[in-house]
Amino acid sequence: MGKIIAIANQKGGVAKTTSAINLSASLAVTEKPVLLIDLDPQGNATSGVGIDYDTLEGSVYDLLIGRKPFSELIVKTQIPHLDLLPAHIDLVGAEVELTRMDHPEIALKDGLKEALLPYEYVIIDCPPSLGFLTLNALTLADSLIIPLQCEYYALEGLKLLLKTMQLVQKSLNPTLTIEGILLTMFDSRNNLNNQVSEEVHSHFSHQVFKSIIPRNITLAEAPSHGQPVLFYNAISRGAQAYLDLAKEVIQNNLQRPN
Image 1: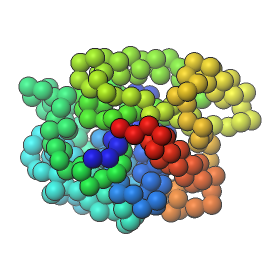
Image 2: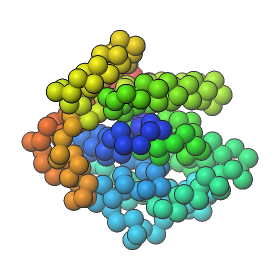
Image 3: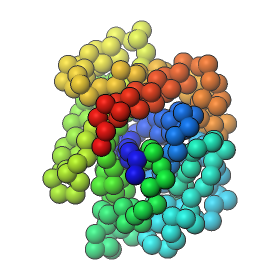
Image 4: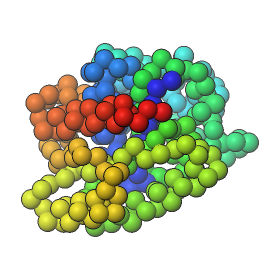
């Protein structure tokens, strides 16, 4: 089994889904088999790779409640080497359904079992909360990528997420690590962006990716076309930034294999 990476931040609007989509696509173009799991009821990662969730016959919700197996839910995207376990708005009900289970935090792990073996990378797009869906992702994952917008409240949110991660390590997944903190929507002309970046590096120097995702209009436009930015505009700054991130993730895991 390859590397399972959850992308999580309980704060919305930090380019979490954008990072899940574009990191997955950038890893896939290196001809590595990749699975993108959309665990957000908004389903933006699903539509962001060109899949209309209204036409789906099942979603990750069916996997979580044991209604359908992975093999009946997996979707081939138009991007070579990239598969999708899609989300639908019915995933909103999963939080309620999970509370009725004996071990709600392992529903995703149990549902997938050996299904992940063919994939070299599994990327999980988590919802912007620290509820049962995110908990399932952290219980399954080998590591965590934290997208962090360089703004005033960013570090407060980061502290809360790290505290949650520590609780997961103690009780559910002792091998969970931080893959990296990813600075997103960065504008070097903005003094606050630079100040927050400096503070993050001073506190978490060895855990911050060298790759930085810029504030880039092409990244905002690509989802409306149902494409990762690499396929929408490969020469854009946003596309190049996610290619750099994919290279960094691959290189880091060659240096510190599981």
